[in-house]
Structures are given as structure tokens and as C-alpha cells.
Image (cartoon, rainbow, N blue to C red; front, side, top):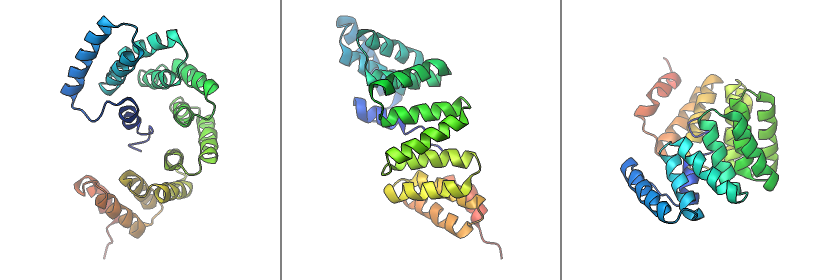
Length: 226
């Protein structure tokens, strides 16, 4: 699932105000932030903003350093969450797990923290824990499309296509404007032999913004033969 990691960069830009910027614009922002931090080294907001830009530029270790600096001052759920994400990206799963657990100790129902830990468990091959957490997340947030889509992605990976189809159908019901959900359900329906329904999903994904050319191989799979 291409957007499986909870649209983390989208969440990042919305939460920290980075906006949609080019790589050069991000680097320019980073340069400005570094200059400001040199003048005001203890300014937490500047540190958060720099860490956000580091993440968007995939400078994982620099982001980790910034969040570590912030967390030395006080426990901060946002810093724990994003440092866990950065640790995951560099493959340091034990440290990522510790940060997610620290976050969830502070805020036990934190959606992003629960989802992040579930996805980390999946990466770390703790498959039973991952699925148990996803089931818990769906129970806790039955009106959240991302929860259903993330669980559907795990089920799809396990070839549990009937269950995955149900979860993506729920995700679509809750968030009918997300093209990736239609594409993922189309792939599942192809595996279930539901070609006509899969084609309908592909058409809807195109209507919602995915280019038809990008989906050419899937259209080939659902083509009816005479």
C-alpha cells in the first residue's frame, strides 16, 4: 500500500506548517532555520521546525538529533512520535519501539502512536502483535478510514483477500475521495477474480486523480476476453 505509513509526510506538513515545498525551497528553509537556531539555540519551536524539514528531506539522523535535544528538556508526545518514525527509517527498531511506547504511556489512545507501533511490529516481523494492534485500533476508531485501510493492507500482504476487501470497502465508505483506496481494492478484487468490480474501482481511481497510464497493467488484468 503506497500510502500505508499513515500519510506521515502529509501529517507532518499539516501539523508543523511546512506546506508543499520543493526540495530547493526546503533546503533554503533549512538554511534559514539553522541560522536562527544559532542565535536562539533553546528555542523549541525553531527546533521542531528544523526537525520537520529534516524529515521532509529524509535527513533522518539530523531529525533524531533535534528531537533528542527537545526531549532532554521535557517529555513531548510529538517529539517521541517523529523520533520513532525517524528511528524506523534508519532501521533502529528497538529505539523506535521505545519512543512509541513512551508516547503511548503519555497518551494511551494516541491514534498515530498506536498505528505507528502496529506498522513497526509488522516491519519487525511481529506479525501477531501487529494484527492484534490493528484490530484494537479499528475497535477504538471505527469511524477512521486510515485504520481500516492499514488493516486491509496487512490482510492483503497475508493473502487474506476477503478480509482485505471488506476493510477497504469500509475505508472507502468513510473516505470516498481517496483514490489509493480504490486502487488497493481493485488489486484485491483482481486476486479474488472479481474483474468487473475491479475495473469499476480502477475507473474510480482514475476519476479521483491517478493517471490511467499508471494503472495500465491493472487494466490489462481486468480486460474481458472474448
